[in-house]
Each structure stands twice: as C-alpha cells, then as structure tokens.
Figure 1: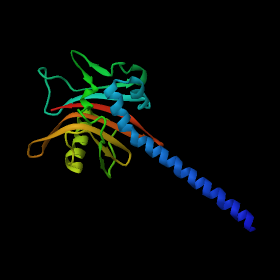
Figure 2: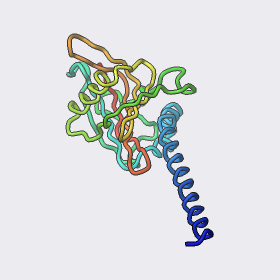
Figure 3: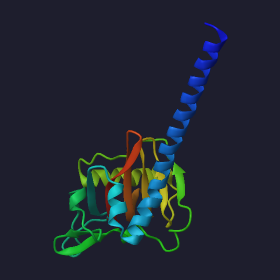
Figure 4: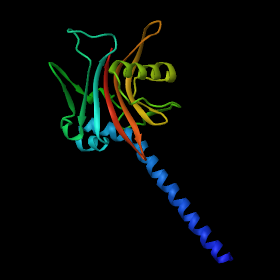
Length: 202
C-alpha cells in the first residue's frame, strides 16, 4: 500500500469518526432538551409539542400514597394513544377532577435551569401493578437519590430519566410518601420518549 492510498484511507476514517461524533452529540443534545420541551409544552398547553415527545402510547395514572377511599378518590391508570390525548392536556377521571399536568409546574422554573441528578441504575418503565410501580419509584427517590427538593428535578438513569416535581415526606420509620408529579422518559434507540405520567397524592 503506497503513501497516497494510506493518506486517503486515513482521511476517510477521520471523516467518518468526526461524523459519528457529531451524530452522537446531536442525539445526546436532543435527549437533554426533552425535559425543557416537556416543561414548555405543559406550561403553554402546547399539544403538538407534547405529542412530539411520545412514541406510541402514554400511561397516565393517579395514585394515593397514604391510601384512598370514597372521600378522597381512586387510584387510576389509563393508556392513551397519541390521537386520543385530550387537546387541553387534562386527562378525565370518572366522577373526579381530571389529571392536570399543571402538577409538573413550579413558579419561576420555566426560564431557569432544571436540577439534574445522575443515577447509575435503570429507570423503571414496565407497569405490572400501579402500586408496585409507584413504590419502586418512591424507593429510588427516597433511598437511592435523597436529593429531591420542591423544585423540578431531572434524574438521569442508564435507560432514560425521571422528571420529578414532588415533595417527599417521611411519616414514621420507613413509611415514605410523595406528593406531586412524575414523568417517565425511556430511551428507544437514539431517542428518548415520554412513557408515563403520574400524579401522586399524599
């Protein structure tokens, strides 16, 4: 192999390496922007932007950490296709007030930087039961993270991230409850999509 051939091969390799690095950076940048897009969509009630964050279906749930009954409301979990998502982004619950995404908003946070926390584990996204799923998220927030404040926080896991706008309460001993909103984003290939919305009440 002569010098000219070696030079051409090295040049092609360098171009491919740079192109791949740019591609990865763009993909990562897009995922980083997802929490901001979510916050903007919810704040402005922008249904188009909100739908762009979803791949196929969206799980939407409400859960009462300290129990529930006729006087408070019921635990619910519904699955919405993109086309079935209400244009006002309020998800109806029979005989109760709708699940309103305003639970994800905190005054003054829209224009600021969202707090980010690195998490070495996986973000749960498969829901066998609503109670089990919420308890797993509570375990991550209360045991593995322990840094959640009242301001919106992004918890970046190995397979996605949680957008959390909630308060953690310790009632007694190991009894932990949370109150607020949690959005679950899961990686799919090179993209990251909104998978689950949870309104959690104490």
